[in-house]
Image (cartoon, rainbow, N blue to C red; front, side, top):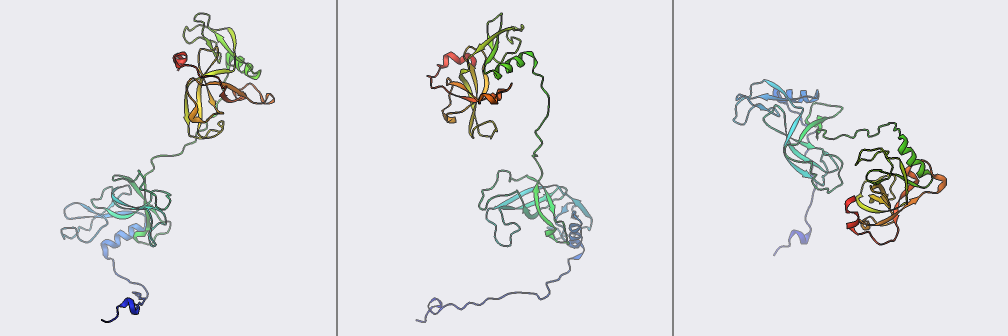
Length: 316
């Protein structure tokens, strides 16, 4: 038996197919017009004998009929007809990060163009994003320098559906007599409230008016800086006031008060905060105090037994 190629070592030779000086061909009047329009940043199709718009334009339609020669500008808005996600691009692909190949039909056309679809920055191997779907509205991204080729369109991109808008608004708030008195008390390390002369409820911070009876309130009441968590929320969005993420914001019913106030809760893991938890204000050093609630960093557990739900259910 003669030896195999593996035994004697297979012969290997590298070859290259090349047209010296490049391969040149005439594109004709139809494709030529298409490429010229690409160079000028426009998309055009050609009208077929049956009245449709063929894009990209060809000399003949699917039935072998010659096109009319009537060119029609289409797009630039377009719709994704179908697609294939490329999580790991290969050498020669238009991007070195995940992208999609898509059949894209411009508005006004009856056929679609295969081109690259850029959905943003993704790590290699990323899963297909939820934004990629049939029917996605897209527009071409043109290259700054165009030469009259299909790559004059660098890619297609989704239409803008969300924007980041400035979120800063400057305004001046007049505290009024009641809130000014309350903040003055905070500057002294005290929580001050008002008692309603009709229903007897104590409101902290003081408001100057009972929201139940609609009567002015003037009787001043001081309550301690301890209270009970009535309800709370675990937050996973960073906040400069919070110690870390996640953090807890809670409604706290101060002892002797009849309305809960919103504050941060810390000094305990977020997943251990609960309704009925007893807490106490954590004050900043006295030299940092002013007429502001920022005197209190947050509320933290006192170590006392929890308050039964039945005792706070009317304040939730």
